[in-house]
Every structure is written in C-alpha cells, then in structure tokens.
Length: 352
Length: 252
Image 1 (cartoon, rainbow over the protein chains, first blue to last red):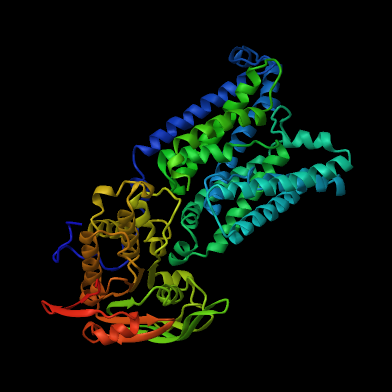
Image 2 (cartoon, rainbow over the protein chains, first blue to last red):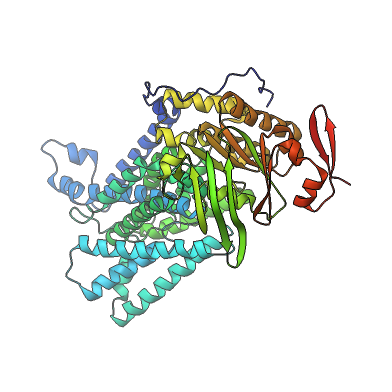
C-alpha cells in the first residue's frame, strides 16, 4: 500500500447525482462480447447439424430444390425445428438453474438433479397422473413446480440446520433427499402400475418432441431471462447473508425468487422432455473457471454453453447407433460424469 | 449518532451482551476492545442489524435498525464482519463495485466508477484489481473487502477486526486509511480491535467490553493505565509513553 500518503486525493464525495448514465456495458470488456458471439455462432452451427441429422432425409438440396420438397419441409417444421429448439431451451435453462442453485446453496456441487428438485418434480407429475389424469400439461407442470419448490426449499432448510457444512456434505444431503423422493415415487408408481410411464418421463429424451409438445419450454427461457435481469442479486446472495444484508438487500426474498426460478425451470424440463443430469453441474463450473462468478457476466455464457452441451449430447446420441437413438439423458450422464471427474481432479485444491 | 439502549443478546442461557447502553460519537475513530468472548463482535453485528436483538433498541441517526428499510440503512452504515470465507470467484474490482450497490442498484455510473477506482487506489489494490478473490492471500482479500466497505461511502463504517491477517506494513496503512476516512471525509469509523497499541494510537474514543458489559469508555490517555487495563484483561500491563503516545507492553 505504498500509494498511501497524506496528500493522496480523497474519495470523491457523494456530490450531485447529475451524471448517472450507466457505463457498465462499455466497461464489460470489448473482448468479452465478441468471444460470446463466437461461442453463440458455434452453438448455432451445432443447431444446424442437429436439424439435418435423422432417419428421415432432410438436406439443403431437398429443402431448396425447385418447387420444394413438401415432405422434407414438413419433417423440418413439425419435428426437427421443435426438437432442436427444445434441446437449446432445456440446455440453457437447466444450466442457469444450476448456477442459481449453486449460488443459493453456496456450493459448487449442487444442481437440480442432486438437490432433490428434479425428483420432487417427478413425484409431483406422478401425483397428478394418479389423482387427476385429465389435467392439461400446463396444470401438470405447475403441480410439478409446486412439488419441486417444496423439495428444494426442504433441501435449503436442511442445509441451514446442518451443524457441519463441508463442501462435500452439501451435495450428499441433496442426493439422499433426492433418493428419498425417488423411492416414494417408485413405490407409488409400482402400486399404480405406472413404472413404465415413470421411466419414460424420467429419462431425458427428445425423440418424441414435436410441434405442439415442447412450447412450454419457452417459459423456462423466459425465467432464464428474468434470472439475467436480476443477476446481481444472485451474485450478492452467493456471498452470504451478512454480505447481502449489508448491501441493503433482503436475502430471504432473493432466495425465494431463485428457488421459484429453479423449481419452475426444472419442472418444465422434466414434464416436457425428462431428466437431463449434469448440465446444471458441469456448465456453471466450467464457466466459473473461465470467467468467475459474477452472474451478470456468467449467465449468458452458461446459457450458450448449456445449449451447446445438450445439442452435442443429442447429436452424439443420434449418430452413435444410427438409425437408432440413445436418449440424451444417458449421453449427458456419460459425458457429464467424465467432465465432472476432470473438473474435480483439476481443482481439488479449492473444493470449498 | 449511533445509540444503543439496553441492548442484550442471549444464546440459550448465556447472555453474550448484557444490557449495554452506549453512544458512539458522530465523527472520528471509535475502537471496541476487550478479551475474547466479551461480546464485541456480537454488539457490532446487532448495531448493524446482522443479528436480531434479544432486547433493547439500536438507533442510527434516530432510525431504529430493526425497523428501517435495509436499503436506506445500507446508505448510512456499512459493516464488514471477520468471517469472510467465501466460495464466489469475483475479481477484486467486481467485489469493490458491489460496494456501490446501495447507490447504483447494479448499474454503476461514471460517479460510481470513480468511487471504485478511488477505493482500489487507497488500499493499494491496483496490481491485483483484476485477480479473483480465491487466488489472493488472506491479507489481500481482507484489504479488498475493506475497499468494498469504504466504497459503499456510508457515514458509519463498522469493521470487525480489520487488521486480521495483515502484515505490519499493511496494518499500519489500513489504520492510516481509516484515520483519513474519519479526518478528511468526516466519517465515523467503528472498529473491533485486538491490538491495544493500534487502538491507543489511532482512536479518538475507546470502548472496552468485558463479559458482555461495557467496562470502560474514554480516550487513550484514560484507558492506557495499568490499573484500568487490569480490570479489563486480568493482566498486569506496563504502559510507556513514547513520542506522546501510550504504548502497552504485555509480553511479560
């Protein structure tokens, strides 16, 4: 601190608030934005690949041939475009949900699939299927979101009460809680002969996504946008309750908002395409390594990379056993666990 | 002015802060000293509404801290606790910028940027401003947090052991910087200190706590007496006057 001297200029006093034009964008770094654009273009490239592969032949030639190929256009509009969009929307929103949950729990090893969120959402779907099978998908999703909210709130409540809060105990608590929800779900599914349907909605699979059956995912996208708008609050909450209170923010309110977003996103994704593990874990951790935890900067990256990761897993799943498909949830599980091991071994020094 | 009226804090059956009433001056450096477990940090946390009061009232400029909206209080009073263990990877500049949050609501203006750069400059953080907090030493991180709290530009600045993990040079610069905030900017700086001699050399007003109660209030000259200190620490401490300052020698 050699710069300290009696004549060093004082901090500017809080003078007139005349010039209050935001300069955040200009400061955000001219190099950061283009890199994000490049990454975004890469994801768009993946999206195009995702549009062109599949059992039914769709190619540029067929689409743009004179007169047009009606069948190819139909496949594209009814099946391929919705599938690709659904992949990107789920990837984005699950990645951001994972990021938010990690900030709220102040732990890097949690995500909606290791905190009981997805399992409780799944229990909610089962409850609707048994008790009110006629409900439309929107109502079903809302019930699932309610269950997910309760399940995740219980998780955070247990964390608050936990006397010894080591970095590794936190995800273990989530896994145990998730396993309990899972056991209850499986028991009732077995009793009501719904085990097969249960398997169908718990495995993340985009092969049945069609126009008219994925649009709810846009609401997950909207929630991601909300998360971006209030990103600073999540960053502050991630620094702890005292830090948040000092800056004049209400910690409980931020946690409630974050919980609502995480629960809604997870419920929507589970209800429309099923469970896709690891995205909410891997992607935020990679982004954190790259550019830190300022959510204002990291949310766009998490969204882009989440979309890219799911697209890639889906493309691999569709190509490996062509013309058959491996569900994206399975591919994501394999790829994700490998990446996660790599991350763990790389940053063992700073587990906390 | 900060005023505490009959403030108590109870953990189970233990009274950690026991019916404390005091006034902290409007300006200058006020230090809170005392042995471990005297209730210093608890008192500071209650004054800054981080901990609920078991009983009593805390007024900051006549505002009851438990009833005043958090954002209004955040522009008057800033608090830094000692347990800043964190998991977030923020750069020093990002952290300091968050100190402006009560003013900027996350949209820093030109003026806010000037405050951030000023605070970074005053705590000598320029060389590490772009580094992530989790890559810094404890002392560097401590300075970054103090820069953030100063950047909040509140009239009252409360710091719980700000000299923690600082080396001698940085401890001295930190105290000079806090002194400057009080003298040049007219702030009221309230510190929990463990080092008696820092308290003696830099404070206008010293509050000593013992077993949850205020054991002494006054200036350095009044505090730095062997018999007064024995009543606080149960230890015979020799006092020497050097260059017009009272220095405690408590190593033997």
